[in-house]
Every structure is written in C-alpha cells, then in structure tokens.
Length: 196
Image (cartoon, rainbow, N blue to C red; front, top):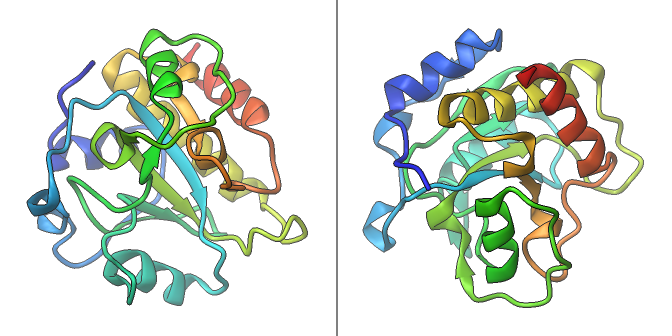
C-alpha cells in the first residue's frame, strides 16, 4: 500500500528512468478525483489504445470519449517511445476488476485468473495507455516496448515494488484483451531486469 506520489515526483521518476516525456496541457490538475478517491496505489496497469496515430491517440486519452470522460490514463506511450502525460490523479483506465487479483498485486504473488469485477481499479492503479490497434498484428516497436518497461519500472522503483506490481488490463477485468501483441510475462521480465 502506498500513497500516490506527487505529479512533480511522477515526472521526475520517469525522466530519471531515461524516458522522453512530454507534458500535455494542465496534466498535473487533470483528473477524475471528483468521481472518487485516488489511492492508496498498489501497482501499474498497462493498456493498448485500439487507435492509430499518435496525435489522435494522445487527444483521445486526454479528453476521453463520448461514453467515458478523460483522462483515460496518466501517460500515453506512443510508437516512438515518448511518454505523453495527460492526467494525474484518478483516471478512467482500469474500471472494475477482480478483488482477488488486487490482493495478489498487493502481496506481489502470482495472479489468479480474473473472473469478477468488483474492485475499483481507477482508485488503485497508475495507468499507461500504449498506442496500438490491439489487433495482434500491429507491431510494438522496440523503443515503445522499452518505454513501457521503463515507465513501469520507474514507478515500481519509487514505491519499492517488484515487477509483480505490473499488470495488464486483461489480467484485471474479465473480457479485456489489452495489451495485445506481447505477453505480460515478457514485460514483467524486462521490468525486473531494470529493477536489478
């Protein structure tokens, strides 16, 4: 269990991990805190956007969709490996998920299969949306995958978490497939290497 870091610290830990970070608008104050609490935080959740085109992807993740107000994450990781900060605080990215998965993340143990949607993931997770169509064919450039690993590792390093605190949306909520195109096992292995 951890208190969310400040927006200033969030920016610093990402930059200290060697990431190319772009601050988008008033990201430090852009959040959904009026809809509920943010924190304590327990992990990092990774998504794919099911979109194409960096500019459009960042705009959607910042502003939201007609059915879901933004921000839809804290950072958008585009194909070029750049992290675009679009919000900080509660964000509409995780939705309801499995409380047994949440307990496993907190305990940093192997994840059970998700089969319920009762726990408020928007409260408990940092979220990164990654530009990808999510069709299983759209490639993940090396610089993008490395940026995903670095972003997750930066947060884990700050909070003293292991790579087991990094999960995919598909491991949290029944019916979700993201991120599609790499395995979370492979990503956690890369995060663990960075944390050594």
